[in-house]
Image 1 (cartoon, protein in one colour):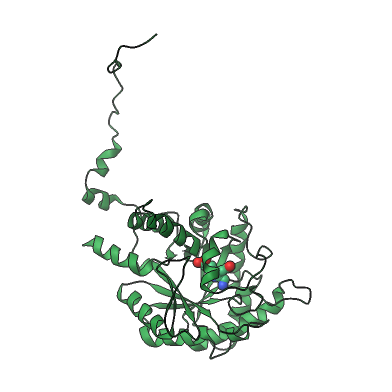
Image 2 (cartoon, rainbow, N blue to C red):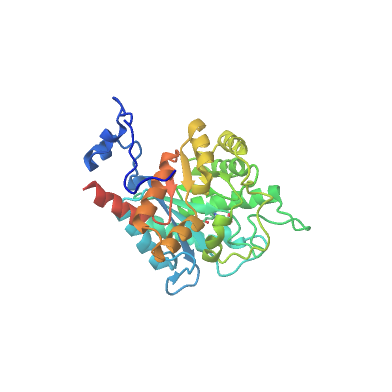
Length: 341
Ligand code: PBG
């Protein structure tokens, strides 16, 4: 049967009755009033890279807008973040020279330790100054720990290196130490070392649920990683959800003050699980690949940059993160302040 041209006649359609969800969406003021999640600049942490021996900041091709900093440009970036109301900064050091044990990681004049002291001198307590505690930036093989003679990552020997790094970072003035190496026992080892040295004041952020992720790709350019192979013998399998609860429980039992889920956007289920059960604050890390994807699509004109950035961080907060590490922290903080007016 064929219809004559024109609208098809419809019968009476059922009206929604008393419940009309659109009422709470009628105006910006109403939407703002009933918003169930907010992002505040203080909830954001800015990750930054500082490269030893640079005279000018160096742009990263896979992370447009992100730089390898010099000591001076790092201080300026930290001051800007503090000015914007950002809650903290996470420092990554890129050394000029690497070796098998990552000896620059705990050298007092190593790039990361110098950078911690620089940033603390610049901003004092205006930002929570955090440092990545891991060996991958410092080893010539690029793994997060030291190796056995057979080339496997030696968990327990690595813990001794981490304990020494924790002391060096505490001496440099770090407020919160980010344990990102995924060695078993890393929280207990660093907590005990700090406490024995009288540094009970330095807090530990455990990258509790850190997955072996392709989304760290651009970060490898940022730290000039030497890694061949992968990190699947220590970072978590992306297939595993329940295992995150074990990682978090172990880290909290060992004394973690804060736990983290990483990456963020592909792991919102894990984040929601952790947030629902954690007794300590939960951070999430929107990693380099998440940044690169949105920047690349926006550069093509395929996505609205500000909208996508804002929505992505909001979604990570909505899933349960108390704090979000994001390379957009300073810029997003400025937008948030602007929108509040
Ligand atoms: C380890 C570390 C990594 C990242 C943060 N800490 C790399 C890795 O585990 O391979 C990735 C962060 C990002 O991709 O933005 N030092």
